[in-house]
Image (cartoon, rainbow, N blue to C red; front, side, top):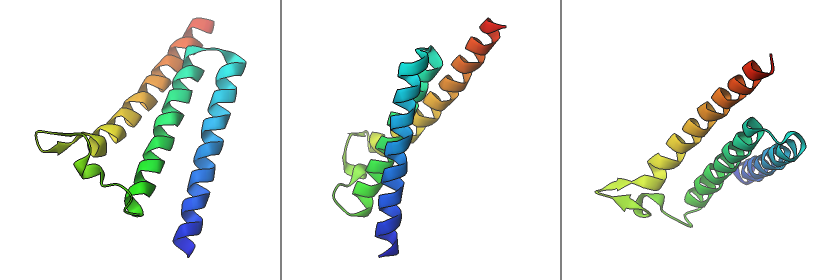
Amino acid sequence: MLFHLLDIVQMLLGIALLFAAVILWSRFKGYSSASLSVTALLFYSRIALELLERYSIIDSSKILVFKGIPILSYGLPLLLLSAFIATLLVFMHEEKRLK
């Protein structure tokens, strides 16, 4: 029962993060805030994928398999980390440009 409650809290916090990122993007209209919104979307999709796997709704090891490697299981975390690094780099570039 506690796991279900934690899953609900995880989904709600993911929705709050995504909503805040989109509001930030619409307010500041910078590349870094747009990149943050994409990163938040990828983070939320990872949460959703993990929950779908935990409840045995999908098996991501059998979705998008290329030469025996499950692209979805390995690609989404790598894409998320790459988007976060890109967000930081874009933010640093925008801050340097403002000075």
